Length: 233
Image 1 (cartoon, rainbow, N blue to C red):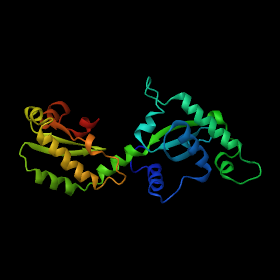
Image 2: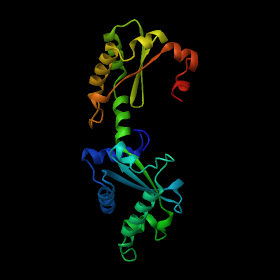
Image 3: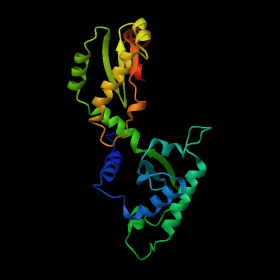
Image 4: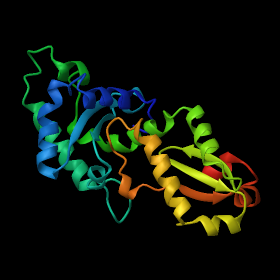
C-alpha cells in the first residue's frame, strides 16, 4: 500500500470498516503475528512479483505506523530480515498443515502445488499513514479556499496540502521567521485540524501533536524555481 488509490488499501479499508473480514485462510497467521510482535494486523495480501509464480510475495498490512516500525531494521532502514524469515517460516508451517493433495482449497489455487517456503518475500505496510493521506486529500478544494478567505491575512500567499500534511506559505523569509511558533501559527494549527477532522474517518490525527508547516514564497521561487514538482521531490 502506497496511496489511497491502491486496491490493497481499498480492501484493507473495508476490513477496518467492518464491511469485509480478513480471508479465513490467513486468520491463523494474522493472530500469530499480533501475539508474537504485539501489533495489530488488519490484512494479509498474497500475490506474485510481476505475476511470476516463481516469486511469491506476502504483504503484512499492519494498522499503525508504530507497528510497522517494529519490523524495520534501525541500522539499515530496511525490513528486519530475521522477522521476515520468522513470518515466512510460520506461513510455511500453516501451509503444510493443509491437505493440499485432496482438497481444492486456497493453497492449491494459489501455489499450484509448486510453493517453496524459502522463496516467499515478506514485506510490511501500515494502514494509518495511507488513511491520513486520504483524509487530507478528501478535503474539498473549496474548503481550502474558504479557509484562506476566512484567515484574511495579506501576508499569507498560499495554502498547499500534499500527502498527509499542509504548508502555509508566507510571502517572505522575514515573515516566515516572524510567524514560526507564533500565536497566529498556533491558531492556524487549530483551524486546519478542525477542518481535517471532518474527513479523518478513523481518528488517526492527534490534536496535541498536529502542526501545519510554514514556508515562504521567497524560498519557493528562489530555491525551487517556482515549481511544485521540484519542491516536493
